[in-house]
Length: 349
Image 1: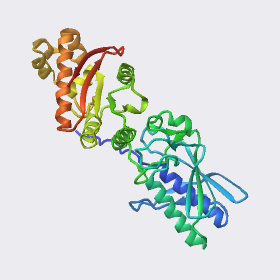
Image 2 (image 1 turned 45 degrees about the vertical axis):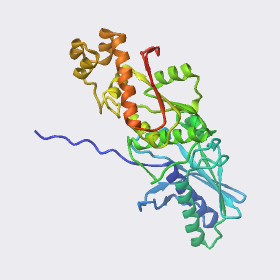
Image 3 (image 1 turned 45 degrees about the horizontal axis):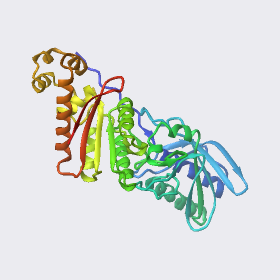
Image 4 (image 1 turned 135 degrees about the vertical axis):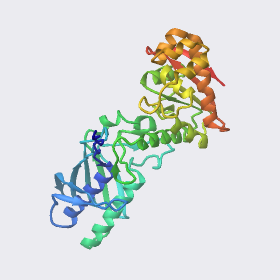
């Protein structure tokens, strides 16, 4: 029988790549002879994608161009957003400004200084390289003020980590390669790492990593934690714990529902349903109840075995987390919640 290969997912372009393309288009208009319809840029790994230029505008001394972000098949909240760049002559090199929809950094721990626009280092390098290239091409000084805006960026930022990371007023301009790889876990894990960095830089002693919104709300309310202490761990327990092993915070709470915490107790570090499963034979042995070998879900096991099960699972998860953290100076506790958000078990070192 012929097997069908999985469809290849389409890549997209980062906000940093889109901003760089918009800078090039606006500079061609500022120093050259009108806006181009299409621009090509060179990404850090040598790729040369083309971008359609949209919604061009100009006034006295300034030129502005837009690029519609195409994130490919990645479920990126900025897919379809318009990244706009305005350029004008400046002095003293390249100056970056945050326009509407681009955030400002307000907390330490990020790769950008407090008070600066949330435009990450690699996109800045890409735009500076384009300024240098265009300045040489048109015989101009590479002294330019670049103002980046993202249409509807302030609203879109509420769906990201930015508010917790202390990035106020909009989105970040991101991207290290210029390429969005669809459904990649790396961006999520990178966000977890930045969350830890911010917690450490702000001397936050207690952080929490939760598997979902319900457990997060319960843990945050239980301890009265600030937003920036809530690390959006999701399924990536390993990504969080391995980073904390090298960059410790005094106290860590892991919170989640019975299914994902059971998998954590059994040694899983990726808690996604498609990448790890509960071992019900092992669960039956842990709890000492052979009936659990016949169940289909951890919730069903809990309905049979009750508090005895969740208490053992919480202790097992605590041991698994301690093993992953090794000798890092992090105090740990585990909280398990039910579907209504009620705490049904807790284990503490």
